[in-house]
Length: 381
Ligand code: UDP
Image 1 (cartoon, rainbow, N blue to C red):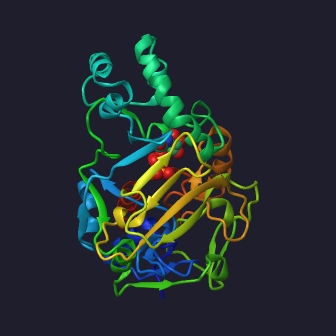
Image 2 (cartoon, rainbow, N blue to C red; image 1 turned 180 degrees about the vertical axis):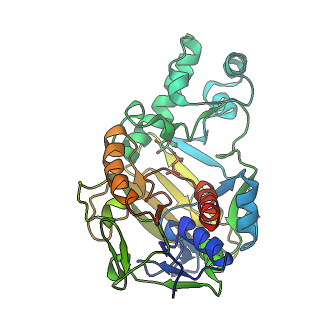
């Protein structure tokens, strides 16, 4: 009855399902939650304000094929996303850039430091904080120490429970020091929000006569992953299976749990026009939460009555009921554990792993979509 089964309906699963459906395959999408869209899922709250249930998701890409693909299913509100850090009450642009430099050091000193930085790294370059910190020039080192102390250290301790130097460099490299006057958080060509939200965009992606979506259906209800084959509703399923969930869950955590960081989102609605007057403020030297998002600014909603904000409190994922594994913790030990599960799944020739959870990676939305487009392409051939 079905040619392919996709497990999960987030960015990975939805994109892959659509591509397979357009290649004339009958696709079954199994989603254990009560909604599609994965962690991009958004919905109006009780006050009519569009919120991102699983934290702020800003779409950004420079990949033409990704942007073209998604643009078939949504129009966009395109804008340059900006973030500030609250540093002892002062609001500083993040990533730390030459504008931030001027705010911190004052015109005269900043002018000189700007020349030194441009001379060292070149205008427009992106310098990871740990690389800047390793620079032997004492003036550059002093800037690096300031940025490390005031932007990275405390925020990273909250988010990961570890210091910046203790976590994988690729995490802090996501937010480099920018040798430019660009206040945007991302430098990608396209950035913004799906005009009617992510949920509507994913509904449109999954709206195809060859796609059947079953909500509230954990794959373990109808599928069994054996050593050398997969059963679907009691019979061997030989079509392709794209799995986008956590890999350890598939095998009952046989080798131990894959570690993740999770977040507790505390939403608050306020009967006032505005709370912080901007979409995201990072708390980099104070508070137990990492950041506050004010949705009406993030989504550019014009008809919002009052305002809704969310605070993010990180914690170590334990697998308890209701917890969500948001971030893979990238290190050698965890990679080894992950590879044990990969070895096991590799015996199943028709199973493909895709996305943040299944690949145990720190993917942005566009990178997941790109990967899904490529995988569907490979399968079609
Ligand atoms: N980071 C930080 N201070 C900031 C912003 C980011 O220390 O103000 C570090 C922190 O370790 C964080 C990482 O950079 O986990 C990546 O940040 P990003 O904003 O990309 O995280 P996401 O939005 O994916 O949670």
